[in-house]
Length: 148
Figure (tube, rainbow, N blue to C red):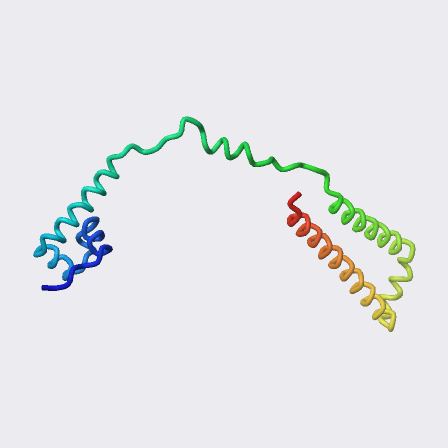
């Protein structure tokens, strides 16, 4: 005779015979003690299934939602500073290009050493805007971390 199956194997057999191993099924069919244990497990599962489902006399979801504070809408200064700086730089660039348009036209036509200065100025402007963007994202992430 084969050794008795474990409790887990007996419970598996009681719940779903088709998922049990062949050796377990053969043992249970020949062993009265294991048949009795499986019968007890089947009755236990049946009685648990017949119990009423617990119900609350109140709306639990609404009670939980009422405890969660609503987000506060406030004016963010982070965006206003960023847009103000971007606006000022754009306006100043436009004014400079308007006043010195003849100079820049001659500069672009000559393509001399001053062309390198123009490239450097453009690179600096791009770096400034990228730096401002990085700072803006940093402030946003810090604000997300601030829980109060």
